[in-house]
Length: 417
Image (tube, rainbow, N blue to C red; front, side, top):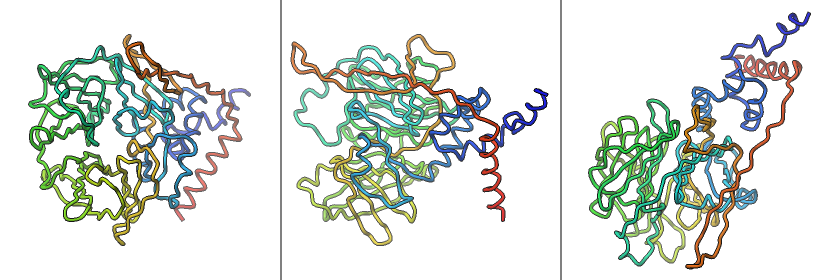
């Protein structure tokens, strides 16, 4: 009798491919909770194919990642279906960071941290002592485009499109050129062939289709590219126009450069690269009819393109803008939001298959930012405090699971008619 009941339980008879189709339609919180139901369900939801399919579907609903709290979303109003705001809480998130497909890389003195805001996972890799350079000692001003990582490393973070592994790249140029790569899935730093020339370490890099790009404007305009699979460097042509405030971005899986200009009028020009032809085209030209006392010190970073071509971008003064190409209308929808980047839910697990002795992995991260006064002066000390997430045991009855399946089949049959 017991065996007969088991054969009637949907958990045992539903094919794995059908389970995956159902899970793809669930909200994020449900997916995270349902991982605790069984090993089979967990293996499906943590598979690379499931994570990639989920991310592809989520990219149709653009989101932005910002630093804030639960009140951040209420500071401005967005039309339904346009864009969502995901908040990464804690002052530590305000440190210089890099993002790739919803993962956040935050280098701090002595280690590199990778966060997955979607799953609440964190993994930290010791990076050793930072080198010392005196290359920038003569500079007495802070340029608006500076994004300084510990030790003046030129940092990069991206995904190898061939094997799907996420990698951290860092380069140093004084006194000799040096480059090393961390494969997040392995957890070990490797020294690789150094770049052919130096790049400005104070500018953010960007990853597009398996390559990381750095913009160099100190010793002549150039773009340095690193293929994360072959780990070979190459040059990329620059657009016809450039500015000291140029920002590299990944816009809809294409390399783009946002160039602000103040002559003859203040405007933002967005150039996008055709990777095959290696030619740049002017995608947007936006007249910036906004008030600012120092337009020559403002850079802009594109975030997303939504329905009807509505274009969202932010600047270094915590403003978020919305631009309507059809009407040439520009509006500032928030004047106090610290945007990190665009964002996509990523269900890839950071849990290492064979944890390296040099890495630390925790689930359910929470961090705070503390300041202390050192005997030698005021010094900021960052402390990460982690809270493990307790997932309650979930009892899924035959009735509940059947209800889920019935709803799925009802929607599927309805869509066919």
